Length: 485
Ligand SMILES: Cc1cc2nc3c(=O)[nH]c(=O)nc-3n(C[C@H](O)[C@H](O)[C@H](O)COP(=O)(O)OP(=O)(O)OC[C@H]3O[C@@H](n4cnc5c(N)ncnc54)[C@H](O)[C@@H]3O)c2cc1C
Image 1 (cartoon, rainbow, N blue to C red):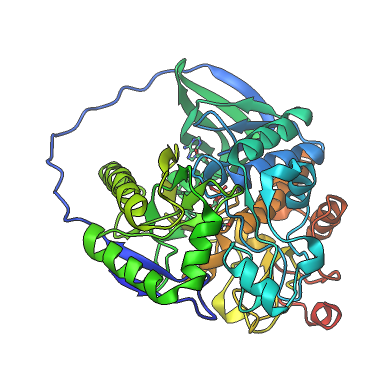
Image 2: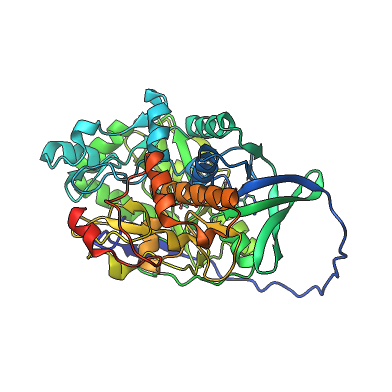
C-alpha cells in the first residue's frame, strides 16, 4: 500500500493498494471467426457510443444543435460511472474564486434535478474562505484548500432518469442493452459501428461517431493513435467497484472523524492492519447513506477481462469486510447494511487519444485561452489559473469521422487527474456533440469544423468560454484572449 497526499498537483489524498499476483492465462489455440452480412439497424447523422456523463452530454448537445442523433449504451441507464458506477460526488465546477466555469449541460442538469437529490453548499457560499464554512464543507466533499467549492453529491437514480428524459425530449434515438463491438472504417474514416445485442449482430451507419466509451474502444479499434502511460503518484489509474452502505448516521461519523483526530487515526491504522484493503467513507446526498469509492487498486488493466473480474471479486469482498469492521468500530455505522455495490466497475483510466491538440501540464501555469477553446476547467489548486480545453483534444491526429470525449480525450497523464472528472466529461461531451452536429450538417470531416462556428454554438448552449480567441490552428495559445479572461 502507498498513500497519495493531496498537493497542488493532486485532487485527493488516498491509499492505493497493489494488485494480487497474476495467473498467466493458458493458450487454448485459435478459432477462425467466419464473416457474414448483417442487417443495418439504423442510419443517423451523429452516433454517440457510451451513455456516461460525456456521451449523454454529447447526445443532448448534438440534438439541440439540430442533428439526427442515436445514443448506444451497453447498460440499462444513462450516466455511466456518475450513476451506475456510484461516483455520485461531482467534482468542482467552480474555480477558486467561486465562479461557475462548468456550465452548459451541467447547469441544465442541476437546474432540473429535484432539490432533495442534491447535497452541497448554496451559491452564496461558493468561493467563501470563511473558516467555519470551509471546515463544515471540507468534511462534505465541497471545500479544499480552505475554499468552499461547488462539488455536490447527487442521487444517482434521479440523475439517471433526468439524463434519459433530456435526450428523449430532444428526440435522440436511445438504444440500451447494446455493446458496440467494432467501428466500421472505410478510406480512413469511421462510418458507423457494428454492435451486439440480444438480437445478435447489427450495424448503425452515421456521418460522425462520437466515442464516449471512456476506454477509447472505438478509436483504438479504428486504428487511431493513443497513449496509456500513468502517473504512479496519483490515483488516476486505480480501479475499484464503489458501494453504498445504508442505515448510517454520517453526521455522527463526521463528529468522530473531525472531533477526535487521534481516535480516527487509530481507527484507520487498525482498519488497514486488519483488512488489508481499507477505505474511508464519503458523504452522499443523504445523511443515512455512506459512499465508498475505494479501496483504490493499482496494477490492473480495465482492458483485461481477468483483471476486471479480479477487481470485482476483491471489491465485493472488501465491501463485506468493511461492513463488519465499521459496524464494530465506527460511530454512526452501528446499524449499517450493504445497500448497493455499483453495477458498473470503476475504471478511471484505460487509453487516452493522441489528438490534434491536448491538455498539458505545461499549460497549467499560464492561464492562456487557446484559440480553439471549447471549455474551461478549474485547476487542481488555487496556485494555478483556470485551464483551457482545446477542440484539438477531441480530434484524432489521423482518423476521420470520429470525435472523442470524456475520460479518454487527449491529455497528458498529469492533466488526466482532473480531465477525467465528471464535470470535465460533461464539457468535452457537449463540445464533441455540437462539433459532430456541425460536421454532419455540413458534410465535412470533424477536423474541418469551423472553430468560430463551434464556439458560437457552444456559447448559445450556455457553455462558459473566455473572450473569443482567433488563431489559425488548433490549440495555439491566443495571447490577446488571456488579457481579457
Ligand atoms: C471509483 C471512481 C471514483 C471517482 N471519483 C470521482 C469524483 O469524486 N468526482 C468526479 O467528478 N469524478 C470522479 N471519477 C471520475 C468519473 O467518474 C469518470 O471519469 C467519468 O464518469 C467518465 O465519464 P465518461 O463519460 O468519459 O465515461 P464513463 O462514465 O465510464 O461512461 C462510459 C459509458 O460508455 C458505456 N460503454 C463503454 N463501452 C461501451 C461499448 N463498447 N458499447 C456500448 N457502451 C459502452 C459504459 O457502459 C458507460 O455507461 C471517479 C471515477 C471512479 C472510477
